[in-house]
Length: 177
Ligand SMILES: [Zn+2]
Image (cartoon, rainbow, N blue to C red):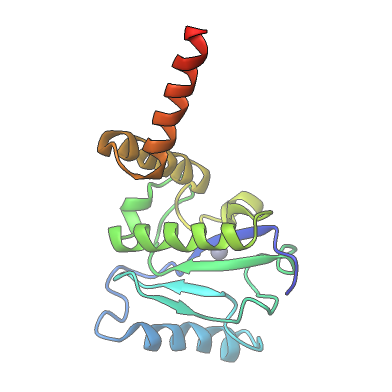
């Protein structure tokens, strides 16, 4: 497996209703056709495509170098969200994408960063003068971490909460000495 140090987020820049009567596989086949027939590439440029209903479809196998960010392809993975028509780099995620896409992209990013711990999550617009993927990825990730933490503490269950409890007990124990 090649060394992965970046994961890039992209969008298709298509309207929300683009090919809405078609399956996710058919949409991915169409994106593959753009890349292969119109651009002359060997395969679809992205490694994962996330449809509006949250379906995650594999594009080019991750073992293979993708074609999605000029100058950054050899050590990166490309994820593409379907949507983002007419957007700009400073838009909010929810202006262009669905809750199902939010859930699935976060899960996929979590899986990929566990598998490739050196990988930084980046937006195409961080390294090129482009709107793609039409939101600020670092802000999006920050907000997500905040939400997750708040949820764990509120629920008072789960491993984070029990870890916190043992930590507090430890500190209280130390203070008593
Ligand atoms: Zn892009």
